Length: 115
Image (cartoon, rainbow, N blue to C red; front, side, top):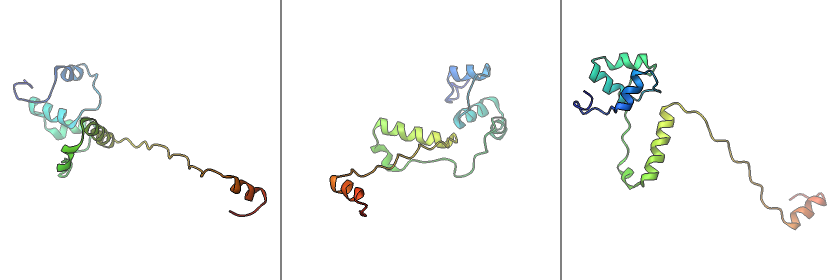
């Protein structure tokens, strides 16, 4: 049925849902199930514990996005997905780098003089 309606549901996705072995559903998957099964999208979002969409929830990439390489595009997509999935992990800050100490700096410190 999904294929006949031109919806983005693979057999693997449907199989995982039938066995209740799926992860967090994507909006696209829920929209497809909503159309196929005749269940209101709001109801599926509620069951999936996802917020209802709002008017500006869709992001349209800027026209310059076509200039990205495949790898860059994949990196941007992964970043956006992490944001959408609620990833809040922040990379630790790099330790402050100390300027290299030269002989005169060490000598002034040894003598108790300010730099």
